[in-house]
Length: 402
Image (cartoon, rainbow, N blue to C red; front, side, top):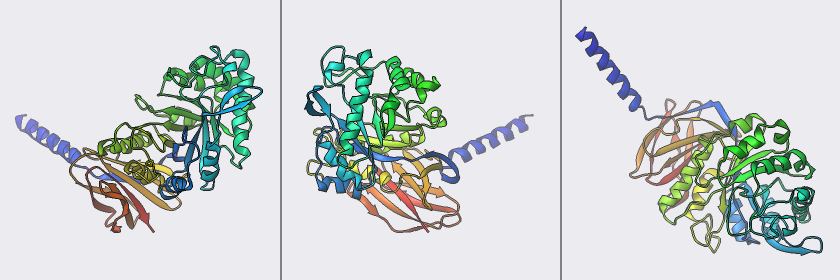
């Protein structure tokens, strides 16, 4: 009996270490997850971005989504002073030449629609829902005048938040009421909601648990502030897309840049989002996607590691998401290519083994300290496997070679 127990424990330990030491990142292109709608950023409050910035953002980095804000000041006889797209329409016009999806997020409503007659906070009066439809339609028409077809329009940016700047509050019940009876009166774009500052089950349930409300929305959207990521498969099973439409990473160092890489990875693998949209292209306080001269930053190149190579219409496929400490892997396929993105959020460099069937070679593209989307030497796949030394604090995108 003692001998039996000895061999049992011995084999158990062997099994434990064989599993623990199997740090291979296994890619299986036969298991498919969500459709990718794209990766993007926002021009809200930035006005007319110059041609240099447009080319760097949508050309060199390959971003495929633009979020415009309905934040500029306009005036007419009907509404007086109100928030419109304004100068951002010129940014949208230039970006549209790159074939990007463009969506708009309102900051508030005209003050005459609100319970407090103020641009900050308050709620939309119940008898002004039709007027709000007209207001959102005016944003759609504003872009149509410059040749831009809006892909989607949001009901409201951060309806759950209580800031001291331009804003308006919507409860889950109010959003559900608008989506049920009014949102489809807006002609042209897809309808997006709720765009809360973070995932709130009450908003999600108010939209998705009532079939008549759910019919009024096409894209379920959330921001990523202080939130625990939640899988969006419920919305997707109902035929909705799910987008993460705003996140800013505080900080100006590589630790902060790698937080952006990890955020993208988590949005794709944990939440199963169809799209990831960073906030400002250019931030007055933190390093964003481009700097004040519209040159690409390190954070911008990290976003480009995804956006440039994982194109709209691709699908995420199965991959070992965390094969070893500080290494995170996701994989995608589309247009005859397989894309693997591996991030190393720590120190030091790490040798990582990958296994995949049906691919002969990959070209690695590397962003790391002192490297900005640099092409590496082609890697041959031998016996359905290859190894690669992932630099410390890096994002490496592997693009299959036919």
